[in-house]
Length: 250
Length: 292
Ligand SMILES: Nc1ncnc2c1ncn2[C@@H]1O[C@H](COP(=O)(O)OP(=O)(O)O)[C@@H](O)[C@H]1O
Ligand SMILES: [Mg+2]
Image 1 (cartoon, rainbow over the protein chains, first blue to last red):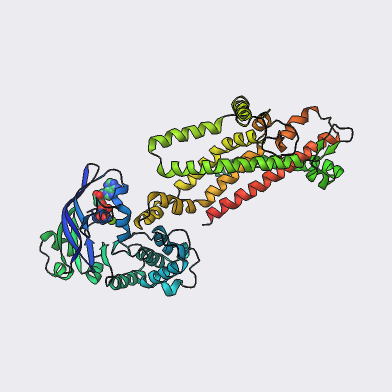
Image 2: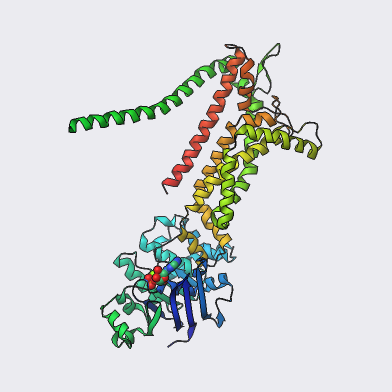
């Protein structure tokens, strides 16, 4: 198991009175794919959004415990710097209503890069890394809204890569896509783990098996089991995990 | 029975159609009437002399009918109101739509609605009593009424249209765009100005055009604070007369059928054309939003 890039220690989260995450403790290994699985409403998205503090935007949220990234407690560090390091791809592709080029250049520009040559280079590298360069290189100035759903999602991945994150959080990135686009994103994720740490929420267990190195099984806000994907799916330690992966509930 | 309801439906449909056609009829009637009554004077004076003549003296021994002072005053007055009103309105809209705490937002929006409901004669009155003496004292000039006073009054009057329409446009921006920006490490303020505002740009542009329409069509308030003398607007303190107020203030004492009376109709026609142009621009922006 690789060295842990994110360490979660006794994390609890409440939406108002109702507790959505309970005593979560886990380590996310660097340069690998960690899948978060579990039935709908068990807290996968909530946990993912805690890692880049997108939950901060919801006023009723209360959090206790610790999430360490690079040795620092993320709740005490500067939020914009954290989000630059820990990028996010959303469930529904959400490119900005601007050109493909401007979509990718948005992040770098935000972080102060002005040189046209540098931006050109970042745009090309990010689009290549997200395996969409060949499809869009002739229409970088066209509006990103005109792309297909699968292309939009890869564009969103490229946009996230453009700020050179270390970690990429993906919340069911293929749930809105057709099977072909889905497998392209899966392949892409497996290539990206050479350079990035990926945490992916999926409700599709085959997907978890296909692409992830580690799997975390959530149930009712609790982390039931966490371990190597192969091991968890062949010899689950907890009865509830076994019930879930064999389809007995959820 | 079935037959009966069918014919009833037809009758009801017909009534609504007629009601709708009343509006169309009014627009047509006004357009035709304005063109018919506006053209004779323009033809008699000569279109160039009418539009670009800089002197308006209908009761002189040798009357002159140049409306350039009115046209320029309306354009400068509107432009000035836009220059002052748009930045204030736009920033207020961004604040209300994106940043303001709920309670503050409710109070400000209530105030904006009230501002929209104040009759223009009241704007004129307050302008006369507060603004005009204020300008006179502040700049040490003999008379505070003039172009500047009119610009300020108009700027305030167009605020509600700009704010309301821009807030609506900004609130319609999908939250996903903003989330994507925040997740890239942009601050909320960067997000509002670099993602939300561009995404709402047609609505915001339309709000500005609406403001232009409101400003150029306003008569009562500017009549009360602009000095109402047909001078060329060559200084912001100049006493001036707008297209609207030119028609309003002379109609009562022009002789029916005279060239003077007809020239007033021609001014109304010019104003009407300006408004048509503004409406076309507005439609352009709103349509741009829908096809997106
Ligand atoms: N913004 C919110 N406000 C209140 N409750 C929420 C909010 N988002 C999620 N929840 C609740 O938290 C629990 C976990 O939700 P979520 O993390 O979205 O689950 P999952 O992604 O596993 O389907 C659910 O019970 C859900 O209703
Ligand atoms: Mg979810």
